[in-house]
Length: 335
Image (tube, rainbow, N blue to C red; front, top):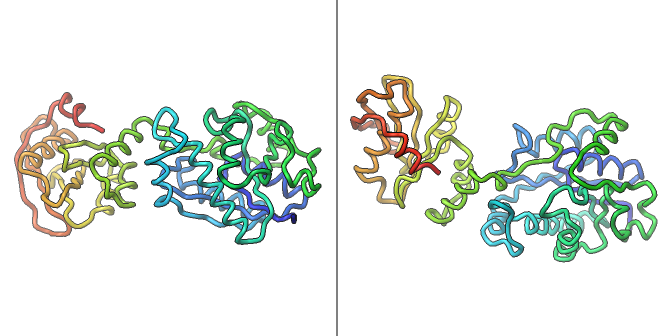
């Protein structure tokens, strides 16, 4: 066993402190960050913050995009979910397996995490931690610097590679101890101390369920679209995305692909609509319903308007007249 370790680095407070504590003991740390479409912990994403922390701590960082593989975990979690679509235990097992692969790849001996006992109700209970450690193939090879004294010594601790006396016994959801430790280390910029995952959000989870039900052959662009704008289930075959501001309108257009229907009101300020459907495309009834929704989200709400639409990537617009849909209809269709 050597003094080389893989650290799971989200860029949040706990993982940053865990790496710092190991560096203080002379451990050679190689950081690993996992990128998915579900991260919410910074405006620019976990990878951005992890890169910043890795540079400040002078450790090499590998960023691994796991979205495609991870979707199988989201769809079929062995250990169940939290209140929404979050498969927390299976998520940890999956990422720890990836860490084990990277550990073997670079010749490291163990893994470092920022886990704090009792901080997260699903994945940081002792029973859950034991399951995760066993099923990931990392039994005895995970060092948790912030809570190590609350667990049996890991193999690196038993061997003397890691000095257990310099590890901590933090537990629970309060961050008082971590904030104090960060101050001692002069770590002041930690924008996402608890991290964040869209799969814990009810609204986003509803959108994931809708995707699984109506579009089992989804691609990565469909996953990105789940985060954008207002969304409506028009029919079993048609889903509508409506931008909430100019930036979202532009983002929707950037995700357009062949066969998508683009809706706009060309003569007054309005939202952009993107309708994605089966090969048959939206029916005339669907188009009229979508037009009424666009009318609702325009400066001409309440008037009879001309709504234009085209099939991407064609340039020719078609027109349909409509008045705004009622609030009741909107709520019945909203995802």
